[in-house]
Amino acid sequence: MRLKRFGSKKRPDYRIVVMDSRANTQSRTLDEVGQYHPLAEKDKQVVLQVEKIKEWLVKGAQPSDTVKSLLNRNGVTVTRTVQE
Image 1 (cartoon, helix red, strand yellow):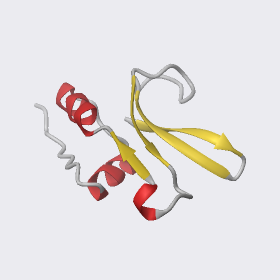
Image 2 (cartoon, rainbow, N blue to C red):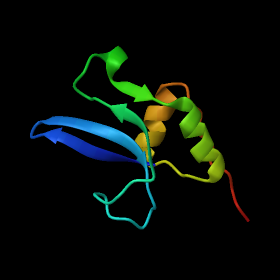
Image 3 (cartoon, one colour):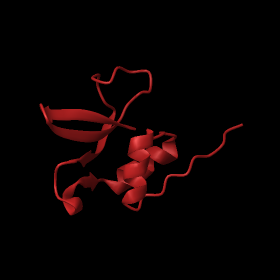
């Protein structure tokens, strides 16, 4: 999971998307699971589809550091499991 930038110059708008880790940042996404509007009011900055996020985390999707912090701030706990 990572952020994909949209919006115009100096007016950023991000979508939280699920992508293949080897893919280019502007390539096709597998799923869109939320939005982040950094210039909006605090209560309207993050919109998450919690059920979809939990499904992707169970399937093994790993969020980027920024996405992980956004999820943790909004009550979606992300725990990293150690695979042997």
